[in-house]
Amino acid sequence: MMQASMTRFRNSFAIDLEVLAIFRLLLALIVIWGLVGRVQVRDYLYPSEAASAKSVVDPQGIEEGDVEEEDVDTRAAEDLSLFSNRESRSVWSPWHWSLLWLDQVAEQTNLTLMHVQHVAPVPTAAEPDHRSPVPVFHAWHEPWQRMTDFLGGRFWFDMVIGIGIASAILFGLGLFTKTSNVLLWIVVVSVQHRMPLFNSGADSLERLFLFWMLFLPAGAVFSLDAWWFPRQGFWRKRINQTQSQRYQSQLLTGQPPVRSHAICNWATAAILLQLITIYWYSALEKWNADWWTGSAVESALQWSFITKPLATQWLTQPWLLRLVTWSVLVMELLCPLLVFCPGLFGWTRRATTYFFLLMHLGIAATLTIGTFSAICAAGWLLFCAWPWGPSGGWSNLWRDRRDQARELEERIPSSSRASATAAEWLVVILFSLMVWWNLSHASLLAKWVKFPHSLYPVVCQLGLDPNFPMFGRVPRHNYGWVHRVELESGASFDLRRELPSPLNVSNQIETWSEPHGVYLWRQLHVNLLYLELQQSDFVQLVRERLHYLEHATWQEKARAAGQWSPQEIDTAYSMLLLIDQDTGEDATENDAGWGFTDL
Image (tube, rainbow, N blue to C red; front, top):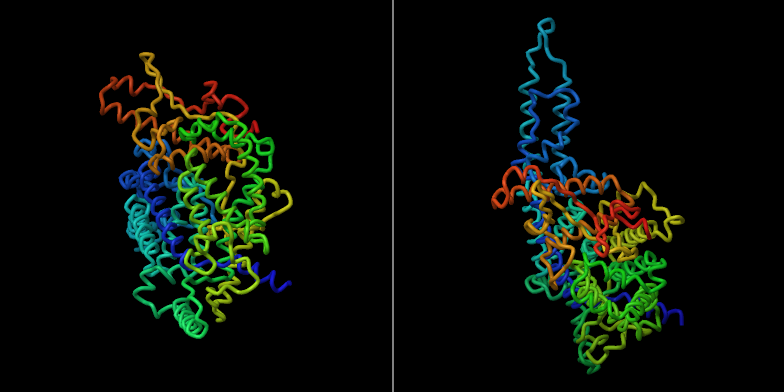
């Protein structure tokens, strides 16, 4: 009995290689879409090469201590960007790395060399020294400054994004699959660490899926690698060997051939559990009065800043929204049991999959959340069997035949080599650290579960530090942002309506879909709202920068259009306000602030 239960449990973590190949293609397309969106906002995020060159410190006029300071107002007047390179460090922790942080490494190295050269003793007539520090200073300074300008410029950013998109294409096609997977994971982690204010749950899931795919044979079937190099690679050799054995068995028994291939190891368990843990962690965050009373979904759909036109139709059915709220909370809590429990998941896994697919379809139709629904739906495909395999079949829409007390016929034996065993143990250790991190950051368990500070670098550098609140806290106010301009003539208007995309993000979404760059700029505002309690000083800094960026951009556009006189444009007064759209009150003047202190 125990052996049968263990076999059923082990079968629940099996993944068909054909399904894994489809997931690989979908994941590559989603990552490409996200990288293209980052390009759409990068022009307003960091300074251009021209502005970076203007900010070069004159080595001959340097005074002691000047290398540690930067005139922010002067830099802001030179370039329209949300952050300078120096200021962007306020959203970066020392445990994070990025290909796009190399400009700061070069800059810090340059400043250190400049400081060392400055404090070096200057030769005098009493102590003749033919070694002049000035030529040496120029020799060290100029190459490092050129490197800083290059690595901090948009060309380097675009080049990294280009490498990521090319790697995603190769990864999706299954050409040099493992190499392209590694490159794509590096680029995705780099971009997300460099632009953290635009990150959402979809970005966390992207890098986590890419990381666990490193330990899976993503290109074993349905790939150019399998087509062009059918006899190379451990898994392709195993597939050929298994197919030969199946063919011989077919000749002896007369049974129909098995047309699918499945694997089951710690890596498949990690990627399946990864998807399940985000729902369970989200359920812990949702363990509050908003979800108990059934008002959470209704409150989320009333926030017009992120809701689509269809959301207003759902608001007319409050009883249905309460039912949806409670159903989501219960299903997320019971999700691990429904998809992995031996003797049960044969009847509940398919129903659970359909439930969450419909849930994400509803979320995508009513809320603007980027690619989160798409990547979650792709992840749920991993729980499905290949339709033409012995465990699949279109007739088995409500039954998962993997819940059986014998080994799967289509399973490919795993490797017994020492390197493969070490890789599986590495997966176990890293996945355990990721779960530990999630539990320690859950508001319900944070008092009892503590994550060691010494392990922060390991988790953060590998990108295993996700955050999936998934509306655990829902704002009770219909927050919106207004950038009000007042001219000397008495005219007053919202200047965001005059700005180019994506700065013209509106408080009402009037279309079914938006460009991904506009969504990212909208996500910036949502993240600021959620970060206000933890990092109020930083939120204030970003708010000031956002205010200046929008105001300066409007001034440039207004001067070019000639709609107002130069004097009116220069003397215009503007305020960036967070308001309650239902009452029109300024939310920054009450106790709510920018965040959720009223919850």
